[in-house]
Image (cartoon, rainbow, N blue to C red; front, side):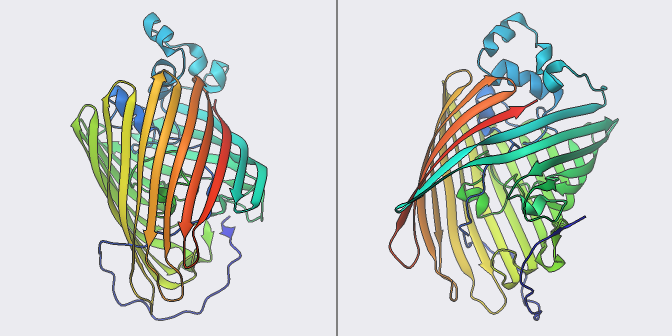
Length: 413
């Protein structure tokens, strides 16, 4: 069953004349999309983990972790992991449901829950409400070189493009499901299905502008298509051609295009990557514009200079063009410092920017934001996190500030 989105039916028009890759762009300021349970931690570069495929089933990171990844959650991520490392063994409790259930060797399973509360103040208005971000069961079945991966969960609100049911709320969702084949001594992975778009940093701050403006978050930004990932020591890459989100109806809101990245390890503690994305839809799901072409092209990198510090950054130039409209350019960027004074405790400072030009009757946007976050991995299965986000944006009128506080508990069982 596909999601039926209540959107006005726009009139059909002639196809836009050009489909040319160009640099530049429009950064779309989206409504806050709350972070989800699908996590990736680019700061693992401090432990010389430049690649993601050893710890994650997805070769580009995020989502279900492998058995090896569960072990590293205890040894390198969680508080008190030094004791396990000194013993030279991993406790059975790192397994599925704290080790109470042992799936067969070919089956990898996990349950992910993320919930909390969010408070936002804009101007003189303040809102506070509880949030349920993700309640997903993840599974991967492996038979020789063949892998089958899927997730099934429940969403009280949001995540509509990932829904399998058509309710206004309380929907069954599947964020990803794909079939893959390993080749060339597991350096190549061919996948087909609903897959997270390979682009930029897989950072967990999914409502950051670099994720929302490129529509590459792990909440509901996946597309259906064919992807090829390549990973060897010192280099990883993935490219995906997609035919749209088949869980989104009507069909003319689905995008077709490509996304991909190439990341090179400059050293054991430093990487530099490039990303590129182009997508065209019959009508844009956000702006309702006919024959919308959007692009994103940029750089990203990670560096662990030493001690507890990791620096990460992404800079994307974007462009969008709709039938009968002028091309629109923009820029979005993120710079983040992650400090781990003791294992399991992360103090995070993030700066971000957004700039876009005016197009037709739609105003441009200028914005800057700052985040202060504390994340505590007090158990291999559990994370407590608090984010304070201050953003100041301006369109045609005076600049407006908003302050958001988000507290969350993430469980991976």
